[in-house]
Image (cartoon, rainbow over all chains, first blue to last red; front, side):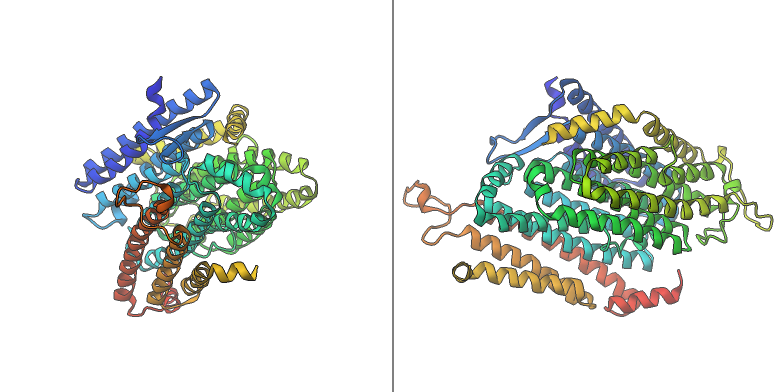
Length: 497
Length: 124
């Protein structure tokens, strides 16, 4: 079974090479290569997940010939493998679901570039998930940013260009802070591998003189990564970037790119800083407060929005707020809830974006609420997908969103002074979520006899229907089978630290 | 505290430069000035690494005169990090400049706020 240990590194390399090869390919070939690549990488990571769950421990894979303090390492546990599998599956479904739109919106002759960007994005996401080296993580954070920027502006209209430049500015601020934090930590500890840094951090934390520099470097890294993952109030670029880019890009950006940074942050908290030490700094309270503010203000902005895609984008701000609130709770349970919410939100948000595009397509490509009235009848499968996604986001039992909210509430009950704010925020946000999501669901199922738009049958768009149905099935699977998944998450967090 | 600041003045300068670059990237409305800010910010980090990586009296880690003692050379890793960082920041600057060219060709201005205003007027 030794070959499974090389799968994480191999999947990253495969993605990089596929990206290079795709740049010289025609559209069709690049597209098939991309699908085959993602399927292969999914299978490999599923094997890694199976292997780690069976053995019950994480393993380290040495890249190259140099041993631990000098060389580069990958590390895989249950949590890493589970996140990698989920990322691959969602990327595959998002690309399939948005393919028709992609053919229309991307300039002819540039389609293969889109697949190059997707391959590079996948490689950087896998590297962020698996790496055991902070500077490698920084380099792949930048690769992730550049390919995400390409995904936004592959549709060449004014809005996406402006969104891309705003996205780049915010991301570069974030990565500047991250780089400075990593450099300071390197100066303090003299290592770049996460496990070695952790030992250095423990030694430095014991010396009073080093405490302030240590906290500053941790704060810089945490703020850098939260700026990059669009935590409130750094979300100004988000509505345009998610609202106007082509639909596959929007789904991938909201479900995967921001989650990749959050997962790196969780790894840094556990593997580099140490959970105990992180909880004793005040940074955790800052994350908690901004998380709650994000939940409330993201939902309020979504209610005011009159454009369905932008509404879903603002809802992402609120959902990212949940994840940071869970991290801010400062307990194992809060972290497990956050990780589950990463899964639930990734599934729900990609579904919502792809369903919304089906609804707007049968409404004359207008995204105003007034135009999409009754579109749930004109494109039945998109209506179903949007309804399921909305119910999951609001937190109705059976769907994945409910389980994560339940886990947040359970985690909050354990932590004393943070219990009340968390429960109040959960209650308010559930009401706000149901206001804007249910308003939309009711609207798409309100008959509109005046509309002269054509309707779409399931047989006409087989691939699209398949994607929506798969998303719905996954969503219900995560909602119904939550206990085994939560067990894997808890075990994964236990071996992370 | 004050003594440390004076002996480590290189690091202090690097932090001030980082702040200047950061503020420019965040607050300027002109896109070219933003990119200049980005480069100041990144260079400040490299200055910080170079300052931290240098030990007075030691030389670059290339064996000369057959001396193999560790005491004679500085740690090569910070220089390696600076090189990697420079590659990253060059590619990011190139990408920013190319988007800026696209935006300028379309809207004939480098002011990001004006571009947003024009987009609102276009109404799409």
